[in-house]
Amino acid sequence: MHIDIITCLPRLIESPFSDSILKRAQSKGLVKVNIIDLRQYTTSKHRTTDDYAFGGGAGMVMMIEPIDNCIRQLKAKRTYDEIIYTSPDGERFDQSMANALSLKENLILLCGHYKGVDERVRMHLITREISIGDYVLSGGELAAAVIADAVIRLIPGVLSDETSALSDSFQDNLIAPPVYTRPADYKGWEVPAVLLSGDQAKIEAWRHAESLERTEKRRPALLRKH
Image 1 (spheres, rainbow, N blue to C red):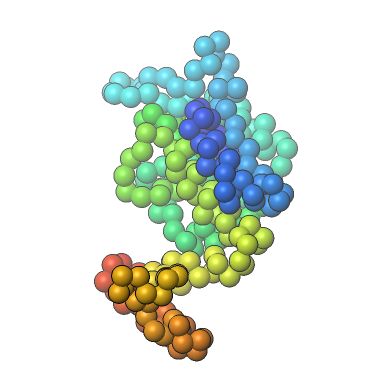
Image 2 (image 1 turned 90 degrees about the vertical axis):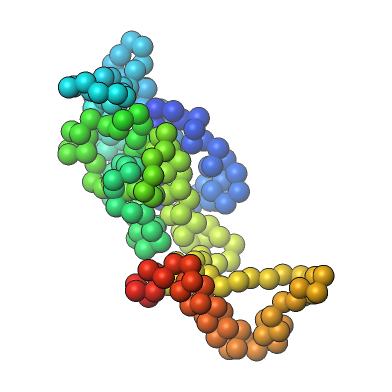
């Protein structure tokens, strides 16, 4: 998989891809993450990528020209499955969307900033808008990192245990069950006996029951999907 992330503030998003699972995924050659400085594509001598909004109002707007220049040059090198704009009013990102995106080969993530992008970017240059929640961030860099992380970890070979991603919360529209590790008894706080029984059928039944109970208590809306 190849992921290009377009941002006017590259340093805001470099760190998540420099450690742990995402770093190892790149080292294994399973994914290539390319962080692109939008300022390299502006014709402004001051390298500006934003301007005042027509009609007035507070805040700056990301200009169409550098975004168009950048996307056009990227598309000259490869065909993209999706060109995604991170926006608070986009589709709500969830596990099923991450699963679908993990099957793609080439993605662009355009990070919003300031008051957003010139509307013509949304009308003519992108294929999809995605939101990670009903709140506003200072920029789309954190949202892009969240989307990329959720997608990359699903690529076969990224996680050391192939079944780990399949048993994550939300894969079956249920919250994951409780997990425990050693010691089995800590200050009188004991691990449920079924987990120590060695009976895998009973363990799986317990885990499913716990997932259902947790989901009903904490995220009942998910049960309608389940």
